[in-house]
Image (cartoon, rainbow, N blue to C red; front, side, top):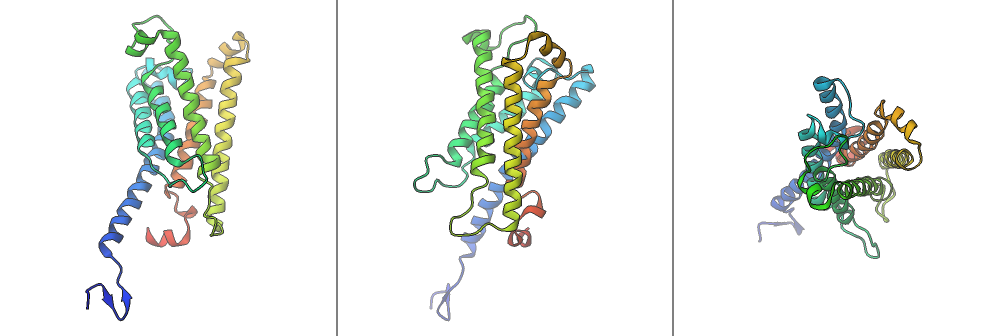
Length: 250
């Protein structure tokens, strides 16, 4: 009798099961890393800036030209790489959008934000991309990349994360998670709307007054925090929101 059969039943493939568990754990670890990076980035920039020169920059992107440049570039690049390599769930038949497609678009946006800086406030030597494309074009690419990054994060929160299996009714915990996803997506949309209003609609005098309070930085931080919270929930880092069977496995 084969070793894997006993009394007419198939014994579980322990080796493959362990391998699957490793895949699941690594999958969750990527989500949690993205979540923690999202929560930590604005705080690290703000505290570092206050310690170094007693003020917070006007926007997260402006930290490229500050002593916290390495933290900004390194964190955004790490977020971009994690997103670009994220596979997510496979696309269902008839779907035109997938986790991988949205994650790669967000990853490209994050890496571009890190490597292609915004306009400097003072004259300075150009970076590689600024010398190659020109300072103004590089700044426009930076803005479009930031918009792509935030938009794809909102798609995750409002569309991808709340999905449920069609043959399985959502659990109470899943419904709670979905409310958080929708809330995070709404915060991202509000942050994006605020940034658009600031850049396109407000008079210059009012912009200068708001910039004294780093309004853009805090709007961007709200969006990044919403991103971080949604990925921590999706990565099962908050045990109270996990399904009961997943609590017992932890």
